[in-house]
Length: 178
Image (cartoon, rainbow, N blue to C red; front, side):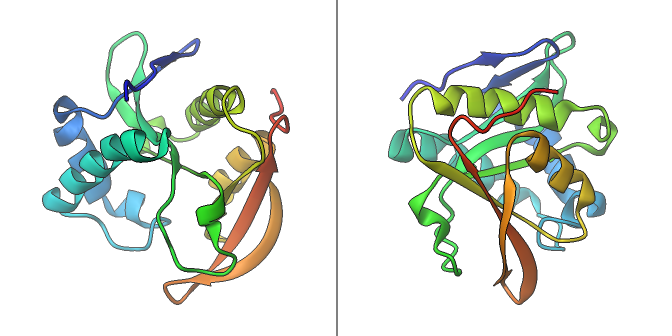
């Protein structure tokens, strides 16, 4: 499947590619990134597998993650999109596309996550009905704000890999604009 390219005022969301590997490895290797993504930074091999998984899900699911690039400079800013991680948690999230996002630390606090996640939902809303979900660690206030700006509402608290997570859901058409 060809990965759609999405453009916003400041961003380009494009297919994960080998050229993104070094920047992705730096982001996923940073302790700041790991703080709210399971607590463990990723090694280079895990990052490589993540890029490959992101690309492969497009063919298997018809959706996945995009790499976020700065529209002006082409710099790697992070990743955003949808997945099915087969988490095996309650509730079973594999019924719905699960939204997620991660940004390089220099891009935090600039509205980039919200802009990218809104663009991803705009794309998804044209091809699917129903709801999307996301999980966020309760302390990750910045991601909670992104989720809420993009139309997510707290659904329930659950547990994933021994840690409490909040499960959010969003119905198609729930996207709000800033």
